[in-house]
Length: 401
Ligand SMILES: Nc1ncnc2c1ncn2[C@@H]1O[C@H](COP(=O)(O)OP(=O)(O)OP(=O)(O)O)[C@@H](O)[C@H]1O
Ligand SMILES: [Mg+2]
Image 1: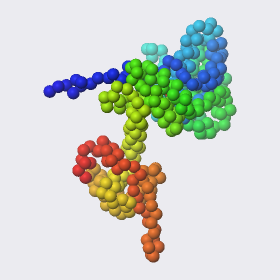
Image 2 (image 1 turned 90 degrees about the vertical axis):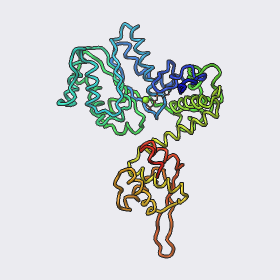
Image 3 (image 1 turned 60 degrees about the horizontal axis):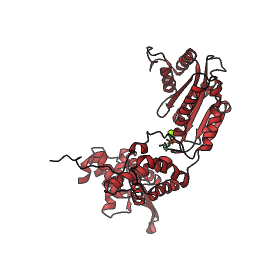
Image 4 (image 1 turned 90 degrees about the horizontal axis):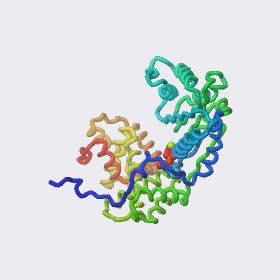
């Protein structure tokens, strides 16, 4: 038997990793104004002064993290050249899934001397963690920039943003200087902060706006030059990926994903170059993937309901009433080893949620002279996708239903 990998070749990608999420670009394009604002906000660091706090806002994939990483490494470099600058420490923390205690504890642990045991996970409170943080900051001295990415994910963010910026003025530290950089993709985040926090924290706000097709085109061309082998990526492919992403949310991450998946599609089809058609297929794949994630995010019973409607759809029985959906739902739930919900009302609640979420179409019907009203449902997506997703979750048994 031959090795299944035997005949795999890749004439398309020269350096595929530049199209992945973890790649940090060396140059930032089309963000000159934001970089200009950022530069002034952080300039105090160069002169040994306490830096301003900075808040960055903007939707997903607009370069907030990439620009911040770029600015931090540029600042690190520049500080080496400047005599007036204090020693600079940059602490980058992603707040997703963390509590304020965990964040402060993480800061403490990066500051503790090498041989010290880490700050305990349990037994002490956030106040104790702050105390230890101040102790360590004063021991080390210098300027500390704390970058809190996805800060809107943090509960009790007020505590963090109230404590840290005032550490010096409140006399908690005297040897070190602290600056905060907060990154959020939620514009309403600012409103959730208490006014005492807002008053002092927001010294510089930088807003990131969606990229247009031209800007995305510039970013993509630069990536494509590095990622693809010579002459294997059409200009039309870049234009298409930029246009599709611009039409959607102006998200650079999405644009880069389209280019990568487009390359994969081309490779799989044995094409010698990536064209706009490959990008079109990539978009379908990406959308399918997103839809699958949304389906698997639903509760088990909501998924059984969806699966039931998918079967009814395939048997051309839709639009269909909730009672008929319930019958099939019961079979699906039992086949998955779950106890089916017993009331029609609970199925109707799920149907109403699924309709609200856009998974279903709903039609209002009137019951002739008796005047009763009821709903009929059908899927608002390809039943194949529902069944495929369910198969990935439950295993091949789904096929036999
Ligand atoms: N101006 C740019 N120049 C070069 N690459 C960019 C630019 N803007 C974004 N990118 C790239 O696009 C992708 C998404 O950017 P980034 O992660 O910075 O977005 P973000 O604003 O932090 O999004 P989120 O809110 O989802 O965290 C990354 O791969 C990044 O390298
Ligand atoms: Mg980010």
